[in-house]
Image (cartoon, rainbow, N blue to C red):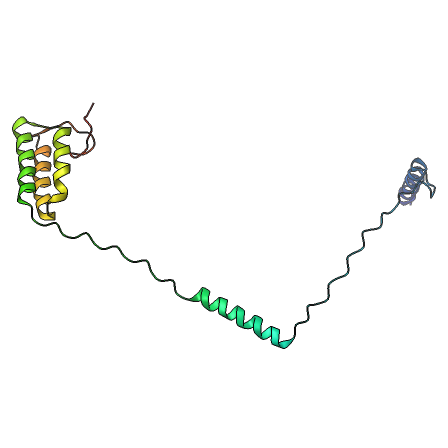
Length: 156
């Protein structure tokens, strides 16, 4: 029975000491600051039925405009096929044959071939590049360009 009485006495003593250390009188009690009053709430907007119809019509018009499909961008025309140019094909073969005779493929050779390739048909381009690639892969040419056979720079 002593345990609960000691606990109650300790709480009471703590309360008295706390009141005494704070000042305990009404004058030193903290003041409560009143909160700022709320502004009055606005009344709901009253619209007459005719203006509501106009608003609805405007919203429907905007939604219809936003939902209309956007036209797809025009697809670019495929490049027109290159006409057979015998002089361009002869020049491409001449560059590859001259490089084969010299045993090396130089940046100058690559530059000349790059200038001729756009004038060749797809089949002719394939024919020339296949021959050049085959020679380079079989070791018939010492490649002095960097990266690819058509690269403009020299291997350092």
